[in-house]
Length: 508
Image (tube, rainbow, N blue to C red):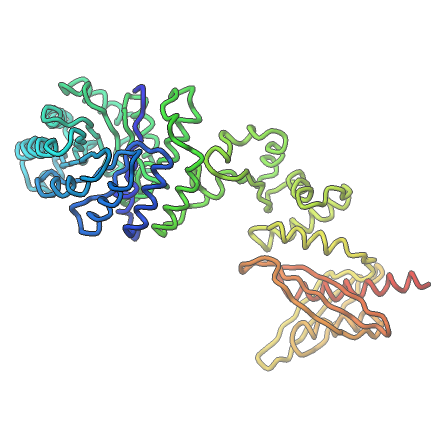
């Protein structure tokens, strides 16, 4: 392996070629400054000859960046190379990256040139680029599908003309790690002068192997990797910078200490900035920077994490810019994770029996709600902490209504240990249910206040209902929580009615 690995970021060039990912000059400049903060070695700022907007963006970045080399892509012709050189003129450190296709398919169908014409054009292009800078990179497009011997001949010519970096792109994500390594070894063995240049790799993810191919190339001696933040890029994207960097950092036993200069704590902030600028959402299961990268839901995993973090995490969330790991509460969560979250929320002194009861409520809730938030848990606990005697327990309900406002409802209660049920009509489903309950629960109470709140946002939010009943001269409050606001109303009504029984018992 190389002694040092150059991180070449092409988010602003190849990454921007993702459909719909176009960025403004100001957005590109912000990202470039963040990449400098991340301490990437080379920032490919764009394709200066492609448009006036891209030219201005490359020029602005070249003028602003001081600690990273700024690069512009250019086709193998004088116009593109001159345009790139003009845009990069203000850079403290600049590179021109010129390219030309070398596969038989591309030469015949796209370029409509013979191999000999391509060979001559590459020589002229690299020679011309060297007039502007001694930092010239050449890429034989579609190298992984090119004839190896022709590829060696072209690369020899590019090196002879002054190229200092030779990039071997897997342009269409076609190769496998084993094939890629064989190609790199072949090029090293059969290309005169290649030992004098930096060998670079640029992989696409069409078959999901971009990172694997890149890491294999690093083991095979590549001195530069071309990557993008969040893996964005043409079609299925490019090799992900954060995946490569953290693979190298985490597996030092395999790769050594190749990227000590990268400030990995800036990976998540950089990812978020790129996502906002491009409008491309980072998938939750994306390695390193995805929302679920350090989230644990399964009970076995949560139990292991609570005992020792290394059981299920190979890097710390803080090392890449997250605040902490997350124990996500869902249907797969166990009691250990549930109890730990309750303790975080201030309910550490609950008895085992009480936790078991609340845990069952929580599991029931996960069948109706994909994500259970802290606010949901507080609502469950607080509802359960109400001093109810459980004299009236809801065991079933059903209600329906139409556009005329008339509703019919059926309710089943456990009243003092006896199952009872009845039906009623009313002005809306909640009114009908309350009327049905009144048939089963004597007392002559009057509904004095009714209030609804959404505890959490989203379509599956839990609703909190508070009711106030006036029974004679006494007033009783009740609170109910459920994802169904009608059920929450019934629970609140029964909670208030149960309070009346407590009051009666105390009076006696």
